[in-house]
Amino acid sequence: MKIIITDFFEKNLKKVVKDLSIEDIISKINIESKNFVDLNSPYFKVKINSKNKTYRLLLSYDKENIIILFIRIFDKKDKLIWENINWKIHKEKIIEWRNKNIEDIKKWNYRKVFM
Image 1 (cartoon, rainbow, N blue to C red):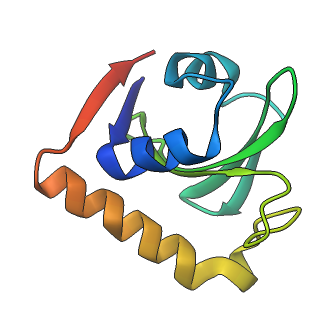
Image 2: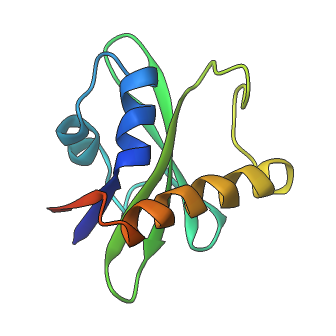
């Protein structure tokens, strides 16, 4: 499985998450697990726990090519998203964040991690 991590995602990660690295996040996701919740395919949210906090990871998963694109991560208590991210409420924001990731990919501002 290939995971794509853009500069946009990494900047967001550094602002939001102080107690997990990208490697920690990758080790905590499992596409077969119950915490991999479908928003509106190909978008999913994943609950990530650290010792002190809970986060919501928003990602896009291409099952055919087995590629995951990390889109954004939130503290569960984020005041923008609050307790949960919802496709009907946050669709425009999700697409905006995805597009920022795609812009980074077009500019070669990303890295691939293999799982």
